[in-house]
Length: 320
Image (cartoon, rainbow, N blue to C red; front, side):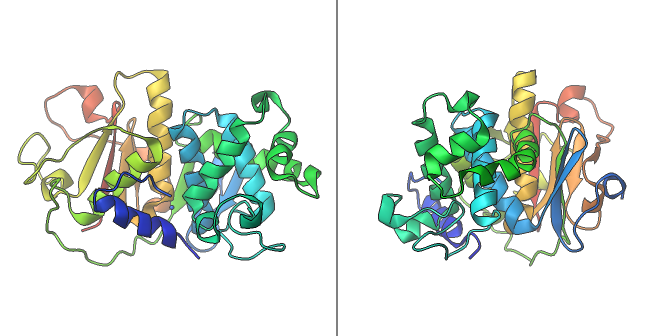
């Protein structure tokens, strides 16, 4: 089961509900999996994931960021999900255990349907973790055990190193440290604009970013479509692009921006994301994705260089 509940919830959001979402230079340094896959590299340690694992890891981490929880919380959650499900949203387990964290509906974790919703499961885990006094300074395995009450409490430590790498990259504390190699295969989609002035794919991206990370400063689109303010040929004019602003430029906003940028790359296959640009770096889905984050060469035009280099905003666009 891959993200079925998330897709369904996005449909609810599109109807106006207030519910919250409930996924060849670099190859030389860090080899990818044989097929589509993702990689995080921090301080010389590399973690490889397939696309489904990457989506789940990004969602788990994004929810921590959106809640204002420390990267330590994401490390604990990721180590737990690694041990319990290998970061897959499995619909079976020991006795009635289900989902990313093998949570048990019979023990108050929610209904089976809720537990199988990756976003719900992650939020429920963080609810429980927040009740553990001093979890921020605990050993990862101790904090995970306080939530899970596992029969094998020491097993979480086996995944701590990889969880730290993923948490550092996906929270944005390590910049340009997470990327995916994807085939860029996306079906053609309708060009009709929604009420926001975005095509449906871009509107789904906009809604998901705010559902996971909370209310954002957004731009690059307008009801009826954007007619000026961007370079010739920009995807903004087609309603296929959204800008997520992180102003003023500061270390804290850079971290937040990289968290969103990495999340969008992790979800690129599912959301049909074509391009992500931030902090003078660019990632492109398809044949160039194997190059990872490349230096971005902004077009020659007048204007604030920092804005042209996307230092203060994440640009994301979707396939046509």
